Image (cartoon, rainbow, N blue to C red; front, side):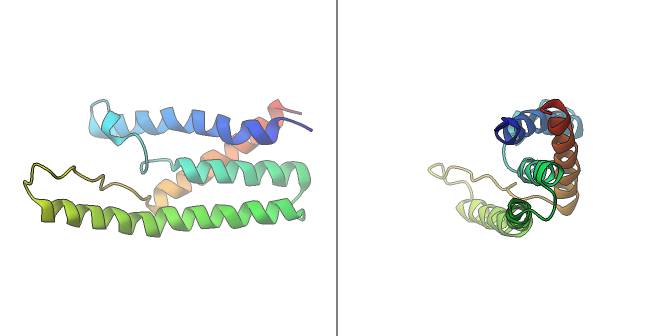
Length: 138
C-alpha cells in the first residue's frame, strides 16, 4: 500500500493554509490572523476532498467505487460550505447585532461559509495537489 492516500489530504491542507493566509492578508493589507479558519480563498475543505478524488481517479480510474464515494463526499462538503455555513454566519451576525453592547456576550464569528469563487479556487488547488502527490509517490 502506498502512503499517497494518507499524505494527500494532509499535504493539501498544509499547502492551502498559507496560501489562504497570504491572499487574505493581501486583501486586508495587513496580517490577517483574525481570518484564519473557515472561509476565504481558496476553500481548504474543497481542496482536500478534491485532491483525494483526483488522486483516486488517477490511480484507480473513474470507474472505481472509491472514486464515486470521493466525488459524493466532495459534493456534500462543497454544498455545505456554500449554503449551510453561510446561513450559520448570517445567524451569527444577527445574534451579534441583537446582543449589541452587552459585555457578557462573546462575539460570534460571522465569516463561516465560502463563495462559489472560493470553492472553485479550492477545486483547482485540489486537482493540482492530486496531480503533484501522484507524481511524487509513484
